[in-house]
View 1 (cartoon, rainbow, N blue to C red):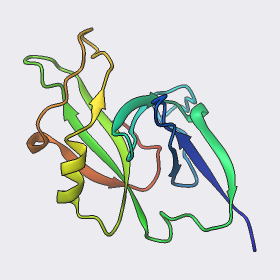
View 2 (view 1 turned 30 degrees about the vertical axis):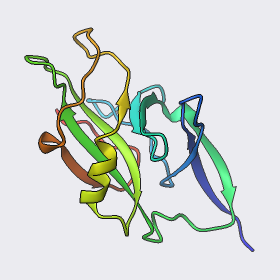
View 3 (view 1 turned 90 degrees about the vertical axis):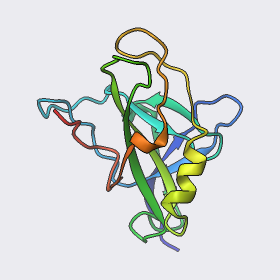
Length: 150
């Protein structure tokens, strides 16, 4: 049986540690000027414990799998969920990446995602507050690397 190279991202929640398979190839994150930056942080929500944590490409672990990439096989979807801070007059806008099975509806996923737990600071210095899902922008992504909107 052939081996297939892929990547794991291990949940940072110390009570979870769930290994999440991410799309392969895991592209390098691009900054505003398009320059490569392995240290650029991205937010990822664990589909098991629902914790949202910052990661970098250095957190990805290359693994040899016995099965093909489930994203390319059409079994998993990588989503980016974009929203601003719920605190009034806060200019912070974020994108959180997460995965879901293709046979689970987006409406059902929103029910889970409402339970996301996030503990990090806004660019303004206060604790970030996730807004109500009615204001989220959700889209499918092909890889971890995408350009942030300018």
